[in-house]
Every structure is written in C-alpha cells, then in structure tokens.
Image 1: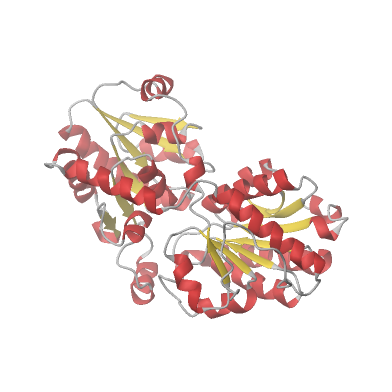
Image 2: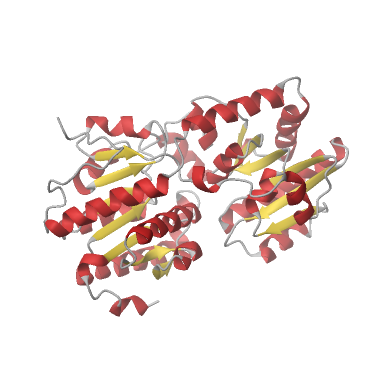
Length: 412
C-alpha cells in the first residue's frame, strides 16, 4: 500500500482520486480509463476498489475497508476511516497533485475538498452528495471548496444553478455499462437456467453488512414465491467484493434452490422476469435492463430514526426518486418482511396490467438518464480543470476554452 510514495515524479501529471464504495469504484474505474485514453502519462493514486486498481490506480487504501451502511454503523470503523483520511491528507500535502477527484462518499470526501482547496489543488467532484435529500446547506460548502462538479441525475444540475459552482449534467455512467452482451437463450445456457418458468433475481446488496442483514429476509420471501409460482427459478448475482462464503453461510439455514452467479451480474439480472433488489445502484441497473422489481432496505433502528428526522425525500430507491413517484414498491425497515415483499412481487407478476405498466415506467425512466458517454464527458471536464490549474497554479478558475457540448453557466 506504500508503493505510491515514489510514483509522483512530475506533479503536472499527478491525480488523486477517492471512491469509498462499490458503485464509486465502478464509476471511478470508467473515469480513469477514459482519462488515460486521452493522456496515458497520467499517474493516478488514491482510494478505490479492485476495478480502479485494474485501471492502474495505485491504492493507498482499499475502499472495502471504509464502506458502511447507515449512520450509526460508522462507529466501529471510525478509526480506520480517520486513519485513511489522514493518509490522503499527508499525500496531498507532500505530493501536491494537479487534481483531486472525489466520487460521492461525502462525509469522507468533503473535508478533503476543503483541505485540497486550501493547498491550491483543483478539486473535481464526480457524483454529487445527495443535497436534495438531506443536509442541504452542504451546497454552500461545495460552492466554496469545489472547482467543478459532474452530476449524474437529471435534476441535480438545476439544484446548483443558484450557486457559482460549475455543475454539469453528464448523464448516468451506467448507460454505458448496463447491457446484455448475448441473447437471453445464450445467457440462460451459460447460467444453467431453464428457459421455461419464471426467473426471479435476488440482489442482497454490494456491502457485506447489507447482505448479512437483508439476505435472510429476501430468501424467506423467495420461499413464499416458490410455493406460489409454478416452475419458479431463483438466481443471485454476486456483487464484487462479497465472499461466496457469506452467501453460503446464510443459505444453510434457509432451504431454497438458488443459482449463485459470480462474474455474470448483468446476464443473471437481465434474464430475470422480476427481482427483489436492495436499495442502491442495483435498482437503476435493473431498471436499465427492463426488469420489474421491488426494493428492500433495512438499517439499524437508530440510523433509521435519525434518517427519518433529517432526510427529506418521499422515496428511498433511486428508481422512484428520479421518477418523482412510486414506480416500484419499496419495503423499508419493519416493512421489509418476507410476506410483504413476496406479495409485492407477486402483484407485479400476476396483477392485471401491472407488469406492463411497470415496464413502461422503467423505459420512460431510462430516457431521463441522459445519453451514453458519461465517463468520456466527465474525463474531458476533469482534464480541462487539471490543465487550467497547471497553466495558472493556485488559480483553477483561470480562463480557458469552453468544452462542448457543455454550457458554461458562469459565462454571460
């Protein structure tokens, strides 16, 4: 983990990037790939996961050690989290990279934005903190310490219009990644699934704590569905970073025939007729593949209570948040119980016209997420900011050429 110490020989090619969760690792890897396609001489280090490491990022700390669920669950990992932040601050202070890229993960990343800004390092934020959901005053913090932001949800650019922050909608990065690379029959053959009957996807989350909390409930709901749907088949695409042993330990106590798939996530999800999905990025992945779903989520009682007090949104699932209404059912906290989940999915599968309506709503949602090419657009924005900082050290806002097709909101 200390290999980065000697990797920053030429500051004008140095980038530090921070992604603290599985989705951030995915989006960060796509961004780094596109940045290096433009400038192969870039040297990138920071915090991320296996995907970013594969794209040549030297990891100072692995993201798996920092990921937490809920507000109170952070405390057991607080020492590790603070230690990682100190390491990044030391890196920024001693190496003075030409750009700091922050991906989501606001409680960790926002103090780093201020630290880097005070050092004169340009700060690029990719994927906005959810200021539209809670702690809206963070907008002013971001306006002060972030030089440019790329947002991925269609309504976020409008939120920042009242500020001086250069925030631009680039489309959602999943538009480039979520697709079936083979026919349904080919995918079924590869996965060992039968073409007849109903295939139900089970997605218990991308963090181990989510899996251990929610998978027992999801499997029990699947048992109910198994007794109600003739020829039902269940497939569980394993998220990267989740050990197979974790899944197996839970399955031992809940008898159900489940095909666990590793390395073919989109194929397994794409062949599903419907799915039970833990709230998070996977809800959008299911939507982009046209898979009707129910959304489930559960955190500690204290985290939920605090969330109810401070989070000002009507829905928790990204699918419903973007649509601005309930497109698919959500079962949160006490409602996340097997009977309700099973009934909700059965209603979609068997209710008159219900499946067709959900499919139409998901297709409409897809059109709201922008055009493909988010990583390419974001790379252009990041590299431009980096070049401006190099041309004018300590002044990342120096004048420079406009990047098409983005509109510079600071221009008259």
